[in-house]
Length: 234
Image (cartoon, rainbow, N blue to C red; front, top):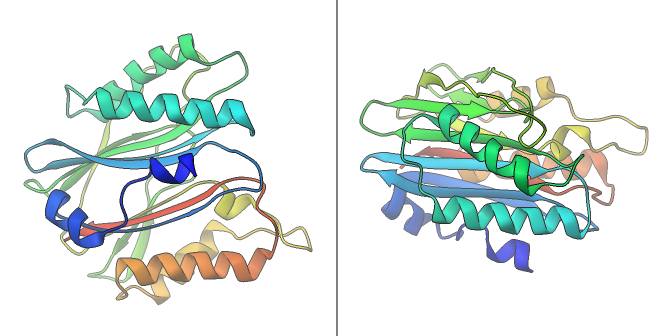
């Protein structure tokens, strides 16, 4: 219940009004406490930060780490529009906060409505996807880096064009790592195929396509939190 309460409100009209973005999300909690969290926050005029975090491990430690990071992210609005610098500072903080052996995977992006660009930095999260509705094709956002909290690292900022009709899809690794009865998993290529087949669907429909396919494919009790966030300009 506490994990659900710190997630952004699901009133899409309010999100469009506040952030100028259409967002649909799904959070499927695991059968035991885990460490997924996502969020959204205006940081500058015409610039909105969006993030997805997945802490390692299960149980109370992972959940507590989630609450700590949530408080930090909401109380420390970035002073820079460079996500890489922000993740580097966050990494320094987590080095002193997390016990040895614990770490966090994270995507942190800034959507600039004025320049129509996405600035982002990421650690070892699954590849975020960009659907270009103008072509119906999906691209992967590359740029792997070490997870947060395991050592001294500087994280680079990457940037790409983000057209009005483009759609950003973020998801935690449970989507592609949860096995079915035969031991198989959904592949990244399968996700891309599903999204391209539904290229003209709205964000809620794309989210539902991914979530429903996951449930029909696995049919398993979740052992890790599953988070899906689909975002487009309002």
